Amino acid sequence: MRGLNRRGLRLELVAGLVIALAVPSWAVSANVATTTTLTAGTLSGCTQPLTVAVAASGAAVTSGTVTIVDLFEGNSVQLGSASLSSSGTASPSVALAAGSHSLTAQFAATTGYLASTSAPVLVSVTTECEYTVSLSNITPSSTTANTLTLTAGQAGSLTVTITPSVEFTSTLTAPIFVTLSCSGLPDGATCIATPENVEILPTTPESCPSGSLASACPPTTNMAIQTYAASTASASPAQGKGSSPIAWAFLLPGTLGLGGLAFGARRRRWLNRLLLVALVALVTVLGTTGCNPRYYYLNHGPPTNPATPAGKYTVKVSAQSNNGVTAVTQSTTFVLVVN
Image 1 (spheres, helix red, strand yellow):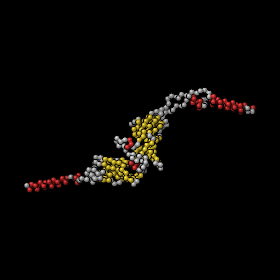
Image 2 (spheres, helix red, strand yellow):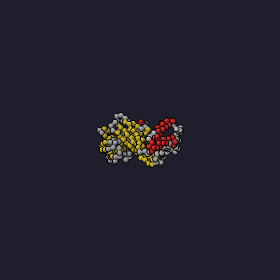
Image 3 (cartoon, rainbow, N blue to C red):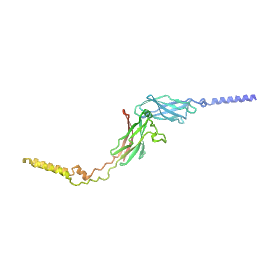
Image 4 (cartoon, helix red, strand yellow):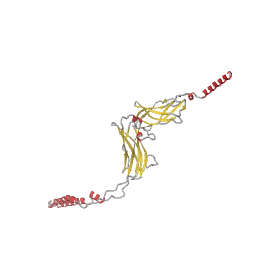
């Protein structure tokens, strides 16, 4: 019996040794160290594309969350989070304000893995990027992106969204208002934003979570674009009431007075008197005939209105804010096609 027990013990020891050699040490460890790597892509305006990779002992970590943190002007600001994919990477994009940034990616500890932080990546932004302007819900819709097609006389609409960066809102101590406007419209077309001013609060988020109330999303406004068709019917002329007694009260004495002056001149200046009479007659005719603009309006009515000219126009939608010291303007464009 003792021999069998010893033999069984030897077999258990050998089996344990084989399993220990076959399974990597990180697979049986309760908390495995990780390595997080952050890579910055090409900066596009205010948007910085990033790639984050997390690995443990050379193998990709396929679950967990990474958070992008920015050390900006002495403040540490969380810009956003992203989940790791099956390849062990995440590809977040963050909006950056103007200035120098030191970005890091932080991997949060999860079951079996320790937390880790990447080396900092330095990024410089030269443009003002407190907020961005974007367009959506263009109506009538078009198969071409950011294009509004209208027939002269038709109206269209679009939604304008003002998205502030987290860094911008983190520095606000009071609400700031942004005023919307547009330029580049053809003659006979107008744009009206409702509301014309939107408010950015220190708590305004950078994105709108699904199912959130409007107050928990970046502010939006509706912009209406109106074109005009040509008038098809001439306006009815105003109905005159014949000669005005008041007009004759001023015109007749003046005419008789000028005539009297002409005939009261010396006889040898008969030619001058004749010219003066002719002048008086001309003034009288001009004051009472179709050469008078008022006469033309009363008998022919106002001219017809032209239509909005057909063509393709690039319309700029601008958003401007002012903190009392500097004004910041951000804009975007869409194409207006008038048929």
